[in-house]
Amino acid sequence: MRIPIETVRCEGFSMDFFRFGEGPRPLVILPGLSVQSVMLSADAVARAYASMRTDYTVFTFDRRKELPPVYPIADMAQDTAEAMRALGIGDADLFGASQGGMIAMEIALRWPELVRRLALGSTAADVRGARGDVLEKWIALADAGDAVGLTRAFGGAVYPKAVYDGAEALFEKAAGTVTGEELARFSVLAAGTRDFCVTDRLAEFRSPVLLLSSDDDRVLGPDAGREIAQALAGRPDFLEHRYTGFGHAAYDLAPDYRDRLLAFFRRDFAEAT
Image (cartoon, rainbow, N blue to C red; front, side, top):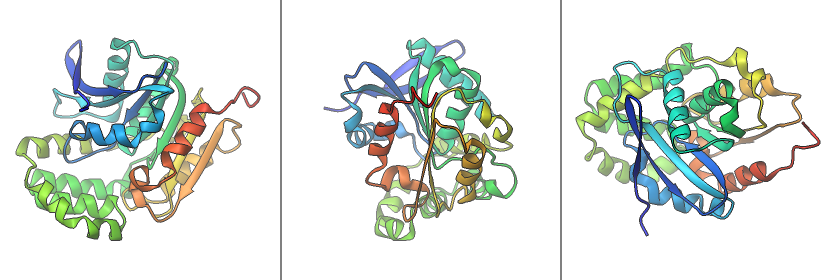
């Protein structure tokens, strides 16, 4: 059965999402940047997170449909929070990967009532300076209309070399379907990470936090996860695991990734908190 794409309409914007699962608790997944919308991969996401279906109704959100010329992470977070409220989602378990992790951090900091547990994957609390270099290269390729170059650069940075080399033909084929509108949208979304920094606010999280990062992250760098971990070290409700060998895309490739998420969401922090 195919997962239907739905649209939630809020004041001034609309946002596509899909849902699956029959569980009583809400789980919100905020994906990272992609050259084409994650809505095209709804069935694959539902298969990957099949272990969550009994405990959760899982919601995966896109970014808003009507993009302004400048769309920073703070605005992405505000729109996503509005969409969650419009759907009656509160006290949710929230998982954000890469840019989705940045949005998730903003939501947890500004609207803590929406978040019961916060899981972060392959993300950064500070994307200023050299940490944004890979993103700037992607933006330049998108602005130049170079779908093939962007797809190669994106796949080559996100995935380990062996994985990318084995799937290069698929990336090349996908590049041929990318439209000019998708390139323009990608550029705006990628540029939204510029100047993002919540490092000095990380201690304000009111929910338990799980951090899943990679020692071989070639998008944001291995230090991005270490900085978050250092800020949260000592909290009894903070858990961390670092991967090696899966690159930035550990959230897609690590075989135990969903098991770690589910164990964290099920964990009893009553004594710790």
